[in-house]
Image 1 (tube, one colour):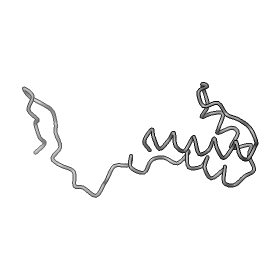
Image 2 (tube, rainbow, N blue to C red; image 1 turned 120 degrees about the vertical axis):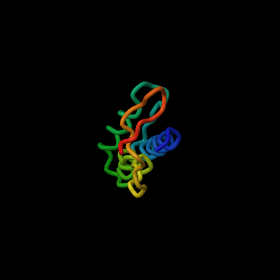
Image 3 (cartoon, rainbow, N blue to C red; image 1 turned 90 degrees about the vertical axis):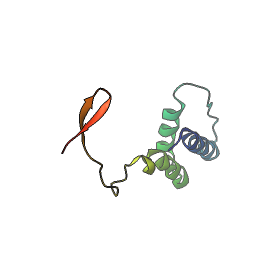
Image 4 (tube, helix red, strand yellow; image 1 turned 135 degrees about the vertical axis):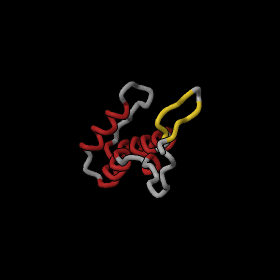
Length: 86
């Protein structure tokens, strides 16, 4: 998940918490993400819990693609050139 997507999800969670609990959350303060997660755990609204769960999911794009065949294994380098295993 990119930083932009992460911040968008935090803002969505903030708005849902403000609507559900009738509070105001200052996004410029330190530790706002932890504060939002604690408030989401305390909330009984399923929509708020779903938004908090989206933040906890790891990014699917970060997983390596195992479908590609590995190339020749490089054992080391000599004068800047790779030495391959035979």
